[in-house]
Image 1 (cartoon, protein in one colour):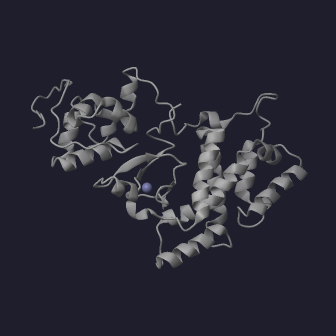
Image 2: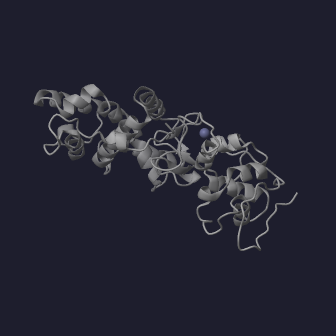
Image 3: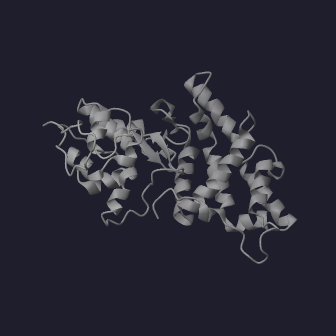
Length: 321
Ligand SMILES: [Zn+2]
């Protein structure tokens, strides 16, 4: 069977259907539309741009942003896969399903900030016999594939940046703890506080220091037997501390002690962080931590008696709500 590609007319009318491709393949969960269309084109030995012209016949000038123009019903026709199945798997065109009145998308990973595009876990793809590079939308809380013990999160830009963390149990525990925090406080709040915690730990331990992050880095250097490591190793090495600090910053008790508490309560907050060994040096001297405290303190120019602006409500959730 051949794809119907007629490109002579300058005025393109929307097509209602396309012929099925000779070979179809299922999308991976949360795969980017660009990744899926590229894989479809590859297995069918056709040019990716030609395939996009078929799937997005109404607009040829935006071929650099296929996610904005690929039509769900045409993709379903080309692959022989149901529109609902495609839309649930591909966040960028899921909105077209909403246009058809379909609901039940709550909790699904969205396309765009704060989520990022990363390569899918190479071992998961291998197990599913998926050939070629697959890019997916990853939430900030998805950093380790617990099935394979592989770092797949921050600073992973190619499958080569993924690496095994199975021999560091605290890494796997941190990923599970991250998930539990979301169950308790919700995606939006955890994402907000994790961003702060990650920044505080990162600034505090970026340079070689007697911290757990650098103990892990030394372990990674020794294990891999190389002189340089991808950036993903550095991000992974601080993950347990970033999650542990998130657990403190998000706690109403500790947040109140730090932001509104008396000097004695504030000292208790700092000692708690020191006990957990989360920063390099005394936490009460940590400028990033003080920055977080000041950012959350009520400011005099805000109206008296009015709740101070909660930035969390202005941040985009990584999942559909
Ligand atoms: Zn995996």
